[in-house]
Length: 197
Length: 323
Image (cartoon, rainbow over all chains, first blue to last red; front, side, top):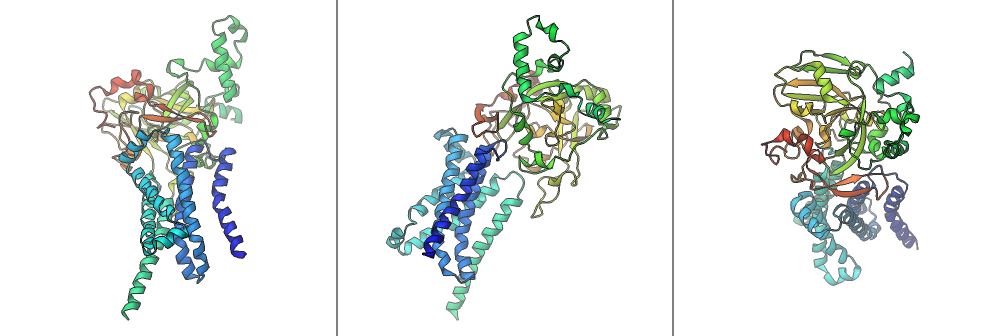
């Protein structure tokens, strides 16, 4: 019961940023160029959900609460949802739904190529996120879902690359990612050491 | 000196000349309708005609204006913040007055530290409606008030050695929080902000010093009290809150060029054919108002539509190399 309620709360909280963004657009709280602010916020929240997703395992281990891992899938899926909105807004309002223009942007602008690659890689990850797929793919599922690390690296690269000059904000997220990856490298080395002794 | 007089001198505008956006448009329509009729005499002396005479139609576009909110709340003024909406909030207490000083130096006959009051006496204030095209591919249409830059330059008499003009923005982290280091210790740009023009560009009649916008004195976030406007160039050339004007024989460094030479040039002329590595420059997002659908994409024009006035300045130059 408690688990069910917490799941519902988790879902609702994940919609909260989008709810705020829509409320802000409607009430003209996003400044003079709401399309641009919305584009940036949707992208940022896709990144935040992805990093939250990758934070679940370390947090569960450090605080010895394995139950936390039940929320990992949900966070990953919301990352994909926000990314979908981010890309859709860019395609509709910035590229005027012109596929040729989209293609040229992907080819010519490295920060867009990198972001798009991250988006494409999220497709198979989202598609295989169900329990059924997890069972069907078995060991290969884990291998496949290690792609998440690559997606995270691509996402932060896209964020830093599109920044014109102020690196303070993206570097905070970079530090977060360095912790997430560092923790896993540390755990792996620890595992190897244990095997040897 | 009383307050009112101070404001008049400072802004170059008298209270009765202050217009809000709506009356501004009504006025323009009104004038269009009645300019030919004899009604003119009966309303002579009213604020309508007095301020409309100040609009220099020779240099003004007829396109729909960007709203006053958009113009004063969407500012790339990194001295305050890299966010476009924050300068409007952070500039609330930045109200430079008559004692604002501009150092004019280098190859000129009359160098010196001039006050804002001195400089404003040199020319009459007029209004010009210019397009503004940012290198980030958004654009606006803005009713600036101010004076032609060449009037100022004539006044200080540059020598034959003056081939370039360098401008600097105030450097003062207590006024401009964005000049402090960020949370991780990075400076957003090397301060003070610097820009430059070739002397013939500076003397072109389009080059303008804004002291106001929308019939009001220039708000801090728009670069009070003196801000360069070179409408055929990307917005970053239009340096804000000027404290130094130096006449040089050599081409000066400009901040963005120094920061990322592959992305930003010295000339920075609006050019739909030369893409910025981050943005295609073929089209622009014209921001008309702050609603979600207040932006529309339109094609970008060569020299931002001012080719007739400025194309001759760049004859024989390869603009894809000298971007």
